[in-house]
Image (cartoon, rainbow, N blue to C red; front, side):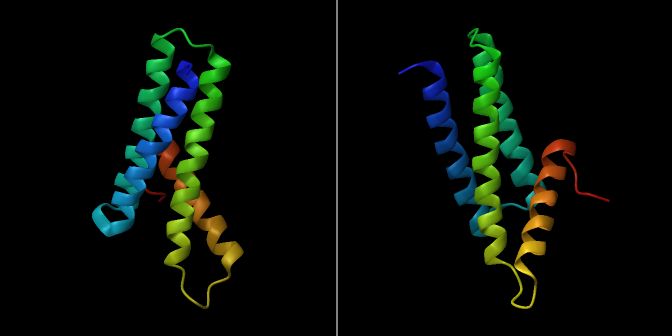
Length: 108
């Protein structure tokens, strides 16, 4: 198994475990998303130190971020109020995730 495949598989397992911890109410969105980013950055940094091609690292990073966001959105959907528009709710939740991921803080 090559380093990229191993990193992707291990990363997804770690991120799924993080999600399982989060969905049980053990952390808030800020803590959860910043932990996700820290995990993804650590995997990326490791691959860079192993001279893995940048395009492969970028693909793994995006794949792990997408997996994390999908798990986050699934959790958000479970908490949606019955009267809320699902498309709007999911768009707001996705923007919430993206903002926290990029800035490391809640939107103002």
